Image (cartoon, rainbow, N blue to C red; front, top):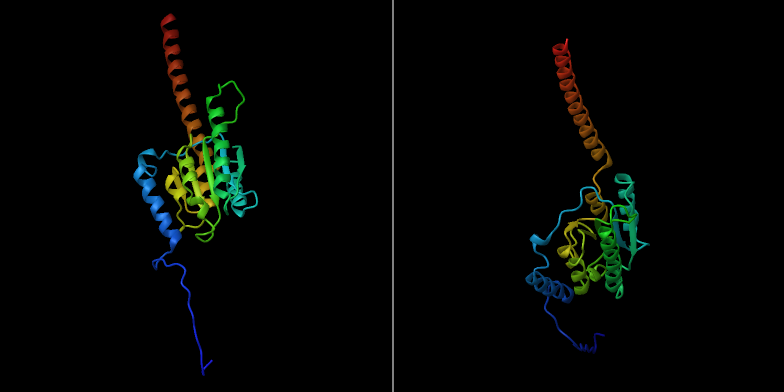
Length: 229
């Protein structure tokens, strides 16, 4: 109002300019867990080359679930996949993912301790995935309890959270980080054609070695037969 105008600004809080309070909280937790050794490269384990079973943690309604299952069916259709459903966004997401992971841990330990004669489900790898979103959308993956639960995994654990540029505390604690959910599935499962090709090469080498042994034995048998005559 040109003739007379007043503006009143009430300031209730102040914070430094920059990435914001969430990012500062992320950096503080990251520094503390890194100091404890949760991110050390020495504790990272390689993924199983031929997994007997795969545990999957994500939301049943997430697009990431479809992407991961499609990739696994294409590459390793014979390997069972156990879904442990969990929330991946919101205030209850972190406790939900912790519970899902602990359920898979119990299943993995039971299967791995079973005797070969027992019909047990073996889980060699666990995959934790979620599609892209803002930092607020992915904030559940920066939970301290979730980070410590990931570090306690009895089998190699791979994360595929968000897009290539997204990093969370969960990624640093995992044995391997994939840039996307689909990439996580592809890292877990070697292409079926590649495995079949390697198996075919081994079969050819085995047949060749057996044939060489048979030829040597035949020559020796012929030699012995001549001596007998």
